[in-house]
Each structure stands twice: as C-alpha cells, then as structure tokens.
Length: 217
Length: 217
DNA sequence: TGATTCCTTTAAGTTTCTATCGACAAATTC
DNA sequence: GAATTTGTCGATAGAAACTTAAAGGAATCA
Image 1 (cartoon, each protein chain N blue to C red):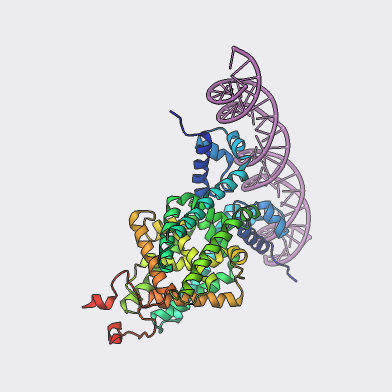
Image 2 (image 1 turned 90 degrees about the vertical axis):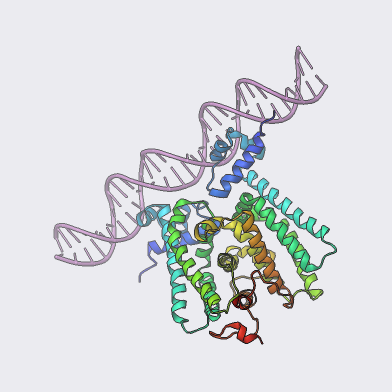
C-alpha cells in the first residue's frame, strides 16, 4: 500500500507550521522534522523554501478563484442578491475547509514582500473583477444601493477573512469555537444580514428586474 | 541641540521594519543599520529582540485602551449610538495615526505565539469588556437590535482593522490611497452606515448616497 | 539484464543571526 | 576633580539557517 508521498507530507507539514509560526518563523528543518522526511527533500521538490511558498499560495488561490467561477456559472438565473449570498457561503466554506492554508496566505499578504505580491497579483485582479461585476450588476438592477464599490469590496473581504485570520481571538477572548457547524451558520447569518440591510435597498421585499421605485408606493 | 535618542531611533526603525518585513523577517542587524546605531544598543535597552517586541506591543495597546477610556469618559451624556460612532472614529484615527505599529501588531496577533498572546491577553480582555458593555447598553435602551454580541464585536474589529492590515490591497488592487483624508472620511461614513443599518433599528435610515430611485427622475 | 528515471540520503559549504564581552567616551554626581 | 553611572562601539563566539553536490537505492522499462 502506498504511504503518503513525501511531497504530500512536506506540503501538509509546511501548511501546519506556516499557519502557526509564520513563514519566516519556520525553518526547513522544522518542516522536514514534522513531515518525517530528509531536509533535502524540500529542495528537491520545491527548489527552496521560497518555491514552497509560491506553490502553496498558488494552490490556495487556484482553488479560490475556481470556487468563485463555479458559483457564478451555476447561479446564472438567480437575482444578484441571491448570487451574492451563495458566493458568500461558498467562500466562507472554502476558507473554513482550508483554514490553515487560508490563515497563512492572508497573513503573508500583509507583508511588503515582492515575491508574494507578484504571485498574488493575477489572482487578486481576477477576484476584484468578479466582485466588481457582481456589485455593478446589483446596482444596475436596482437591487443594491448606490455603493462605493471599492469600499464595499474591502468591507466584504474584511468580513470574510476575519474569522480565519483571528481564530484565537474567537476562542480566547470571545469564547466562541470558530469552525464548528454552529459558528458557521451564525456567522453566515450575520453576513446575510449585512447583505440585506447594508447592501440592498429594502429589507423586506426585492423583485427581479423591477426597479425598486415600482415597489415603493 | 539633542539629536534623537538612540533608543528612539531603535524604536522607530524597528516599527518600520517590523511593519514591512515582519518580526521574524527582521534581524537585529537590520534594525541597527536602519537606526544607524550599533547592534549592541538593542540589547542594551531592551535586553533582546523579544524584549523589543514586548515593548512595542505594550506601547500600542496602552495608548489604544487609553483612547477607548477617554472616549467613554467624555461621551457620558450621549446616546449609545452616538457613543459608538465617536468611539469608532477615535479608534480609526488612532490606527491611522499609528498605522505601521498597528499593522505589525495585528499581524503578529495572528500567530500562535505564546509570548505575544500573554502580553496581549490583558489588553484584549479590557477591550472586550468595554465593547461588550457598550453593545449591551445599546440593546437595553432599545437603540440597538437584539445582537449576538460576540459576532458583532468580531465584525466591528474586522472592519476597523481591515484598512490598516491590507494597505497594499487598497493601493494596488482597488486603486484607493488609504490613509489620506478623503479615504478616512469615506471609510468612516461606511462604518456609520453599518452602525445605522445593521446595528440600530432601521427607522432613522441615512444614505451615503441618495437612494437611486430618487436619483432616477 | 542493463539502462533510465525517480526518489531519498549523506555530508558539507556558506551565509546569517543573536547575544555578549570588554573597552572606551561622555555625562552626572559627589 | 575624582568617581560613578550611562551610553556607545567593535569584535566575536556559538548557534542556526538555507542550499547544493554527489552518491545510494528502488522501481520501471526496454
């Protein structure tokens, strides 16, 4: 029977360590020890530590973008508001399912690191394109308020990443267990609430393709 | 004339470097070079690199908590909603004024680092106490909806920290310049909007921009 | 069987980092 | 003015880091 590949072992060990100790705080030796492989294995598969970093970031964002595209494909017939909700749920779920990798990626994003920024530039541009399009659609169809799109994107991303980025804050200060089913539903509700109240016009009724001034009186 | 103290030089150099390269990504030698002092100066004033870290974190949070307490003192006569708005503005301003230190501190918070967590525990507990009290007051006086307080605190903190934590995202992806006067006002408006719409009961709705059905005709 | 490719290990090269020591200068105190 | 404290500097020991070269082994294929 084939035991887990050395490459796989390095990947999962490094995700775990980068998540808890950060990229710079983790040595190749640490990774090799945790993965139970020889030190040089890392160089063999990823050339060096930076190569491993690039690989992991691409791994995360490839799937991330794929989630967005899949949702947009499959929700073609829904209202923009519903699209946004489905997308929110899918992205939250993706992040929770890959919480270690996600936390690590988001943290490294906050560094002024040329390498990382170059790797991420394309992905972030795509993400922005899809988000922008979505919000513009919503505004055009009068489902959404006239939003300052960049600010809203920022808010949206902030809310999405908060629980992934600060899990210890949730457990140690707020005494909530992030990542369990209950938390997921609760947080999703909060975000739906935000969509309904802060993004959309009317909290009660929305119509497809009908301008909201028809609804009013 | 007294040139800036060596200690001061080390502090500001380290804040700058930790901000851009992270704690583990910065060496004591880097700091000494940027500060234009001898390497041993760091140990002399802060015992070692960890000591410097502790000092900076305490520096940030001492002032941070002080800002909260000052606002709560001075807004004793206002409604809870107004209190929350004043507090939001004060904290945003404090963060922007200390953006480098703030980004660094928030980033290090996302690591599973025992030392850091111990230093911050007291501050975060205080912060939570004040926030919780404030939201409970608002709910009791019926100004606020019946909120899940922990979730709301999380959202609130997420929004506050987003612009500080991801400045490059704003400049490079959204093409906004964070930290300038215009951005500050815009973002503050967004947060006031959130307070009005998502935190408070709806009746007193205010729009950032006029709702589009008014613009329409 | 022999050759090839893929994977792993040994071993060392080279750089980089932290922390500390002892000497020296300047300022302050007595 | 002497003594003491405070601040600074250069050098370095000792540890830890990343990377690479070269060889050993296993599996596959001709």
